[in-house]
Image (cartoon, rainbow, N blue to C red; front, side, top):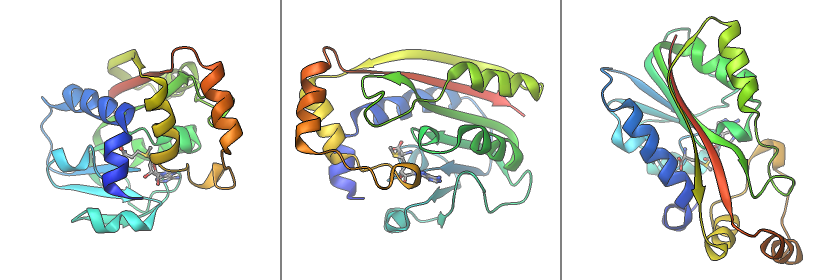
Length: 203
Ligand SMILES: C[S@@+](CC[C@H](N)C(=O)[O-])C[C@H]1O[C@@H](n2cnc3c(N)ncnc32)[C@H](O)[C@@H]1O
């Protein structure tokens, strides 16, 4: 991933990261883990934070980096005070990755990811927010703070988002959006937006 390009066009991801940082800013913690850290929108604002990503090319952007899969974290139970993730879990098997975040956390888990949006049916199968809360309920986990909000952007931003912020890994690795499909998306989508779910839980 090219950091300069990504950070210039990852408007939605940056906004969601800033919102999540706002939610966790009052928490006390010593050790942290950022899952699907990318270029570090969260990591760089957190103390003693290990960045984990499936994309090894991101190593160069972090002091403390580990290659790993969100669905099978390479850590013992309760390894970090807080485990966070921004805009990555929709690219992973959601139940598995949330269970893994909970497993390796001593206390807090905070994440945000899109649950609906203009790119549905084209690139992403968005995770179902109800399923997330059923999973937490089944584990008797109390949700401290939850926010569902719309992020709107222009068609040009949508185009740049698709072109410049990187292709999803793994599940969508064979996926390529051709020019005609991008044109189709731009014609059909009236007001591009994402609906983002952010939450903080104590495990
Ligand atoms: C849209 S980027 C978001 C990056 C960063 N969190 C941010 O806020 O900008 C999604 C990231 O998730 C990573 N990713 C995708 N699938 C993953 C998986 N199964 N395990 C760990 N990271 C994964 C990608 O490599 C990419 O860096």
